[in-house]
Image (cartoon, rainbow, N blue to C red):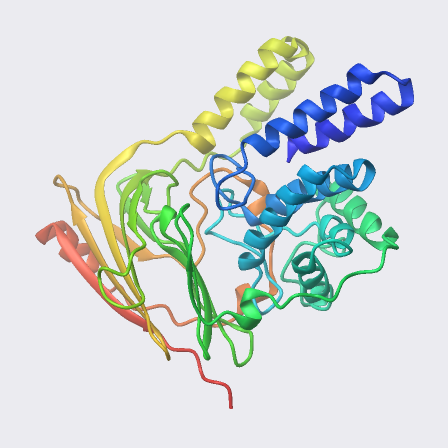
Length: 394
């Protein structure tokens, strides 16, 4: 999404200064974005799919297409929008823990622009526009000061779109029956009673909605283990091996994931003073500032310290429910002080993933994990089986 913004900057500069070299730089930046587009259709955010920031990337490329009418960009956006549509949920929420950056943001301008050219974009724009008041995505009404500018600008741009929209296409959360499996690890399942999104590339973290009401029926962000002063989680991107075939039976998917250490470092007064001093001195060097930024990102977001723990999650998609079978194993002795199947957990540093959403106060009955920590420590393995059974339509 940053590169898309830079492309718009180069395009503006080229037009204002009448400098074709700057315009060519904008074109080259966009071509690089398109070259890195995943085969499934999304634009990578920290090597994965993040629905929230995907809407911002789509917005910048849509604005580029709006001004250049580049056919290649439009075709790329068709693929991106078609994939993103699976991350729109029946209650008007978007994304969550199954995204690479855990965000539930929604920037509407790109879809309002593309509504005149892509039916799926028209469907997304209309569906979410009618549900914004529910507070399940970040809007100008609930954004913080840090993101106020970019969010407000997106909504203002969305309101300024005048091109007539195409007839909206039905979204997967409205029409999908069966499963769609993507090479990146995302599995989306729809039945008469539910709509569910499972990220097998992140240890099977998931979100399931009841089709009858649209309400959240189940969500989990994977397993969290505390041992002494260390915390480990099963949701780390890049540590999962998944089988999306139906070899395990009709409508099944399996993932085997390694746990990784969680680093949740907070900004203390001492660290804040040091950062301010650096901002006023050595960070005036672009090269040093860039190096420090990369180091911080690696430590808090992309670094992986594997733990001697593994998870195998088997999922079966049935007509009336989803069955889940989890098996946790120790690969070397470890005292497990606490073990939980977390409803919401962010194992990386990502401030934009911490907004409050209305569904967070909904009562969701997670399966009991009582006694599993002791069993895992003592026996080296434990299991949990549970089913998600939303009500059918009346």
